[in-house]
Image (cartoon, rainbow, N blue to C red; front, side, top):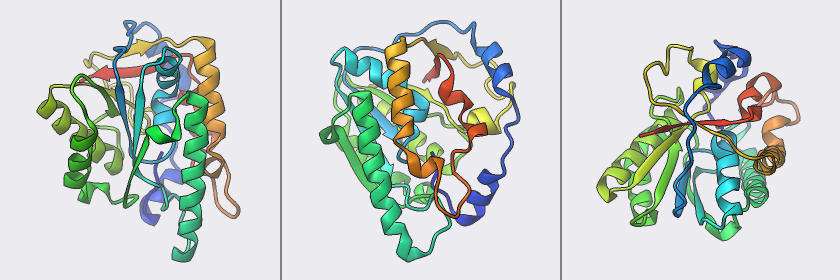
Length: 246
């Protein structure tokens, strides 16, 4: 989920989804089913918690089958609130710890989490660095998961473009996940795209719910409106996850 600059952050706080959950659910309930490849998987997360929000149940499912999953955290989410500079190191440490606990819920050990420590809300200026780092981590035969290239957030889109470059260069399968699309897009946004529905079992769905609860700083923070208010959490509670094979 985003850490964002103050100006963008204010926009996010007051955002009203263009499409309600019930409408998205009706549209997606009949999507063709999809199963991820059971090969080592590299998940690109622009901010701590994006991997949980967009693909947490898929990650838990893979790990339950002992499929190796590595998560790349492009930023530490230090700019998620409009805090004084001297307070941002504290929230950085908080979010790092939250992400490690959340990934543990999904079955991903801390030694499979790589932090690039790039500037939160500045990834659109750092795409070559993201690409270079992913090139080092992506191995032959891997499956890559990344945000969609049109996911309505510049950090997400920069990570997506970097993932496309790496996947093409190394001949890897790439699949997109979504978050901001569910809030800033409408029913026409994804029209004509070959979306797929991943149906996790209840164990994986509960692991995702548990992981999300570990991101307490996004659900509440003293003196600030939460980054993840209840009206933005609906898609994370859907009984399936939606993906787009690239």
